[in-house]
Length: 208
Image (cartoon, rainbow, N blue to C red; front, top):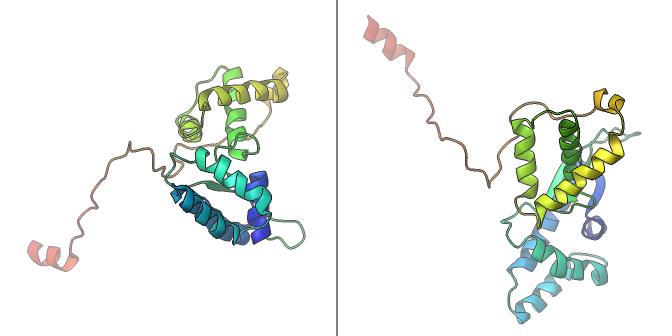
């Protein structure tokens, strides 16, 4: 598990089984939180000892955590990682996933997937549906220079994947539906009370 966590910190994306990813996800979230909570030089020094005890390749991973990931996730209250499902592994049919650090832009699968969706819709002259708009906002809400980085990615996807009309008309992957779960930064929802349950026996007696 220490090797898996070190690989995630170093490469920002790993492919593994679902069971291992859930354990590694909690492990990485805890390490980054410990590093973020250290403010003074003495606290940072102590945090490096605690974080280094739970991770391999300290010469590469510790500078990455304290010098790069802590500033990147300074405004986040958690949720530094994301799990994306893949097809089962060939051979033992084990559930396989991608575990990645968010706000990466380099090896962040969801970022490039959404950029490709936006590129195709724009070339087709279609408006972004509500789910795609929500996904874009979710990807950019904490990302430094997010809009600029995302537009560069969309431009690259247009050049790489959609060079002719045939590629635009082919059956390419696209997210369907209008609901994609809860995001703690979005508060555009209403709290609706549950309907009051009635006692059938009481209703029948009152009717009589």
